[in-house]
Length: 265
Image (cartoon, rainbow, N blue to C red; front, side, top):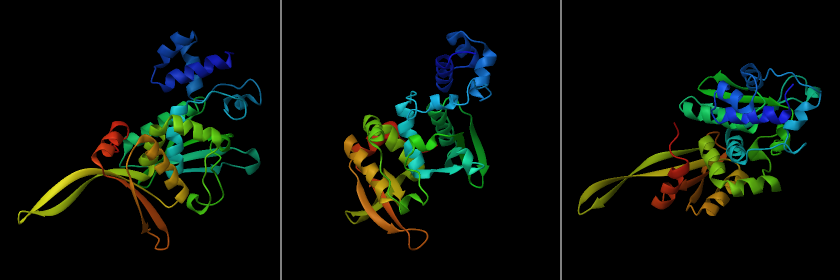
């Protein structure tokens, strides 16, 4: 059986887009071994081998860029729940992605593979969307924001180690949030100029969420990046639920967001 370091390196290379044959040559292992590792069919050597995967329990490596993006996706459209019997403590992280944006499904899948390279990621078709899921005993270790109620009904705050990651990778965090609960649109306005109506179009970004805490995390990162924003509240679809909307319309700020977010696809 190959050492854990070899397995982790092979999975890391695969997450970067390497083929099975290229990974096998680089790691000096068989192609079948690489296939077994990436599909989750590798036999475990001990009962507690899964502990070596957890960055919080055992100090395993964590790709900070991918994690910052995945954290943004989770805070927007993510959910963690038990799978099977509660006593087994197996959790499923689920990110819902609209069918209108197939590219985001692939980006979410890639991020999960990079953050958790030793586990299988599955995509479940739903009405109007796809659920990207991965099962792991340690999701609560790296996403301590999980709770019994909906996110806007409870406090959402980042742990110190999470703050350090998103401050070092604010673009990935903002990108994940906008990919989940945000959009890039073209705004059209009409103005009277010299007695004639003139129409103007300009791009802008929106982010909508009911959680004050999640909205706060976004604007803190926008400030860190030097992006100008405006904020307003509006009544949500359920009547009583209030939605907060962050908008970015200034040309330099939109251009900066375009450099690392861009339209959904």
